[in-house]
Amino acid sequence: MNSKKRLDRAYKNAKVVNYGNQDKMIFFSDCHRGDKSFADDFARNENIYFHALKHYYKEGFTYLELGDGDELWENSSFESILKAHKNVYHLLQKFHLENRLHLIWGNHDMVYRDPKYVQKHLTTYFDPKDNREEILFKNLKYHEAIVLKHCDTDQELFLCHGHQADWMNYHGWRFNRFLVRVLWKPLQIFGISDPTSPAKNYKELIKVERRLKKWISDNNNLMTIVGHTHRPRFPEPGDIAFFNDGSCVHPRSITGIEIENGKIALIKWHIATHSDGTLRVMRVLLEGPKNILDYKTEGLTK
Image (cartoon, rainbow, N blue to C red):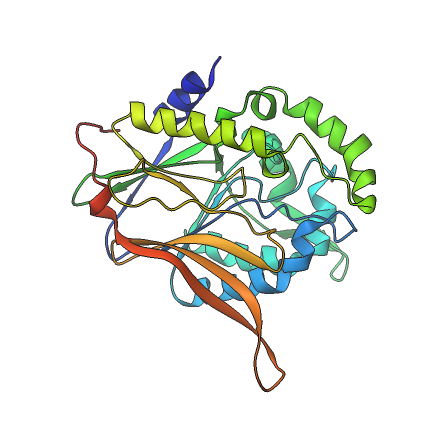
């Protein structure tokens, strides 16, 4: 199956979520939450991410994670990840309890495409303090793709991880996972990058982006938001409507995409040093905001 067929299938089977201009949404992806070992890239930015997440929860945003939230190639179990970042998961739990959490699986957490796996590993956890099982994510569902459909205009935004345009990381993910666990994870301590990742292999990154753009163009320039390559993308209206929210494992920063008041923007959160010597987590606007209607396509309905 080629990338076009994989993307077509993901779009056809996508969960439809209706929204309006009153809704506020934040898109993050590629958090790669790990176990706080030397290979846990997320650990460096955990304080930034947690501060941003608290902001979005307080401000009434819906949280959408576009794949690779949990690093399940380097880590064989969710339990060790939960133990390392329990504060993050308890905050995500609050989003879930208020129906403000939508999750998509990527290649690094592709095991979540199996509902039975999700139910077994994410529904409850053992709390050693109380010596009993506690609820974490009751009735949690992961999706391959989501279509956001505007209540008034019927305009669609297609959301997926983006590895549908990457054969080896879609069909060959188990082999890549094996290589990461056995070979590339131990070599990270010496600064050697994993060449299976398009985020660290520029030639592969360009190929993946080219395939995604081709699919978007072939589908009436359907507004599409992905992750996977870790490279933020924010087109101008009239260009190919290919958006990428970046990742949460950039050096010293995380990037994401916000939707608020019918407008879309690319943002960054980072730690800034102030003149008084204090460090603060700051939000910076990178691109936008642009009216989503400016990216309107015709003739495409879900």
